Length: 429
Ligand code: GLU
Image 1 (cartoon, rainbow, N blue to C red):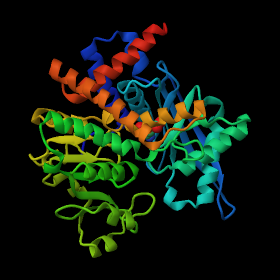
Image 2 (image 1 turned 90 degrees about the vertical axis):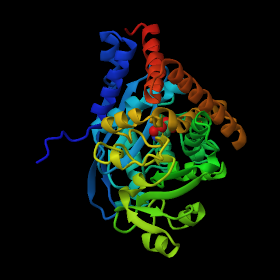
Image 3 (image 1 turned 30 degrees about the vertical axis):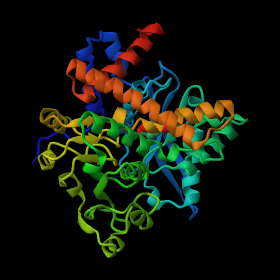
């Protein structure tokens, strides 16, 4: 019997914070304030199903910190959601908004459910029920939700509509990631994945590597992964493997094609949750390998863009010595022991709070456009996103070089000091 404690994302988030608190020499009160969320909500959501019966779902919303501005973060639909996962993700949002220097705090929400098993109408009722339970505690100037794992622009619009019904009047800035034309921003769909590649581009430059001389292996084929692959291929990179769920048996497989995968071809055989049809993939000439084999491909770049805790003590030895860069498209994909190994190996880590900050940065642009009620062209949005991501990347890599810090530590030092300073300036501590 294993005596190892089961993995807990919030333990990991607190450990990461404690490490940086030590580096920064933070005082007790600041540590006590930032180690835990400011506020958290756990609630029941009764939903009438299409067959007339009622099912009660559990929902969470955690507001970790709002010293720098309204708290911000997505809502996930996932069968394995827990309060602790949401706490960790909320804390990571606080650091993420701070590292890219946008005037927002951190929050996260979740519902224990599997949307694969729910019809569109049931999902609509679930979204509306979620908002009814939390409507008094969120809003454009307090806490602003967004899409995340298995939630989309359509879910955001249902949530907005319910919020506006409860409060009366239009409030498009209540939620981001809305459909374009309904208060959404052009470029929001692409933003997280493109942001990952803006950061990869910075890392390649530092390592004096040309994109066309690099290969990547990707975990996940949802919104983040698909857009990261799109831009990485556009700048000349080759993606040799993608790992994701099969539509039928809900098991992960690695789909490999040499010299590289064809994005349009894969998209054509993928459902809206990023699940691939493995029989069709075989017909298109892909090797269908076990799900975790994305990790042991001979590539220069690993791009985990699925869920937390994927590169761990159990599989880290399978990462090839060819790997120079890890870009964390997902939140928390690397466990602490694996992270230590990568640090010692000198792998260029682009940590989650920096790598995937493009999504929330574009959400911020969406809110700005909502407030003005004037909408920018796509080029303008993506240009602003590129500048913000590049500036954040350079600030982190410069500190890492100057202080001889691991990139994750450098990103945390910048983010945590900004949040601690905001708390101090407000007189909270
Ligand atoms: N869910 C995304 C994240 O983890 C985006 C959050 C947002 O846009 O508020 O960063």
